[in-house]
Structure formats: structure tokens, C-alpha cells
Image 1 (cartoon, one colour):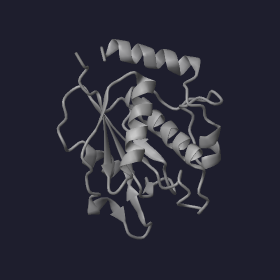
Image 2 (cartoon, one colour):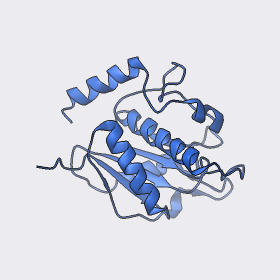
Image 3 (cartoon, rainbow, N blue to C red):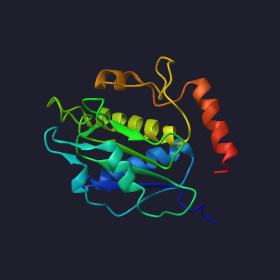
Length: 184
């Protein structure tokens, strides 16, 4: 008997479906959870900030949660637009700590801000790190100071590239405990 989907991925605006399928496989494997790609959703116009030419990621999280999904679940929004929160120039993504929703953007990891396109391998590596990082926030993990930990705070692509695709031992224990205690 197949496990019902625990994790949903949804494109917000146009996103390459092949990228979503590859990201779904990678994230599902990492968390050992079933995952499903939902039909794409349009970007809500009210989340766009005209002067910044960016979308407000917190408002996009709220938009993701307006749909009712089966419990328990996590939903990861994936978008190609540049994201921001008011206190930062940009963000790679955002998540609700111990919540249900997370979002990542392919814009900056794909070279959208500086015009330097990374190799396909590096691009996908960045997106996988971002997806895992933001979803780990929904499982209760905060930012970590351990060098190389997936949960380290990355303010630029260089710092993102220095992160591992794995959690440090401490974060791994926290994640294991969380998943065990929530009976996922």
C-alpha cells in the first residue's frame, strides 16, 4: 500500500515542469517522504512590489495556505520570480517555522540577479539545498551556526554554494526527533 502524499510541490507562475519533477524526487528521497506535484498556480498580483520589481515571499506563503490540503502536509512553492521581505534586498526563499508552507525561487540561483548562469548541475544543487533548507524550517529547524550545515543562513550565492546537502549531526538529531514525534 502506497503512503499518501505528505509533501506537495506547486509552481507559482511559469516553472519548468522537468525541474519540478527532479526537485520532487530529490526532496522526497532526502526526507524519505512521499511527494506529489500539484497543478501550477498563477502569481497573485497583490504580492508584486512595483518599485522593487519583486514578489513578497511572506504574502506568497499566505497564498499557498489558502488551499486546503489533506493533513498532515507540507507544501513547497517554487517560482521563477525574485523574492523579498521588507528587511532584506532579496531572499532565496522563506518558510514558516514549524508550519506548513515554504517557498523558493529559481531566479537568483539561476543567475537572474547578476546574469551569470551556473552549470545545470550547480543550478540544481542550489535549488535542492534551498528546497531542503526551507522545508526543514517547516519541520521546526532554525538556522544553524555549524559550518557547512544545510541549515546555515545564506545571504548570497557563495554562502549557498558552501553549504552541504546534509544536516550537521545536531540538526539531524533534531529532524529525526521531530519526524518521529509527529508520526510522519
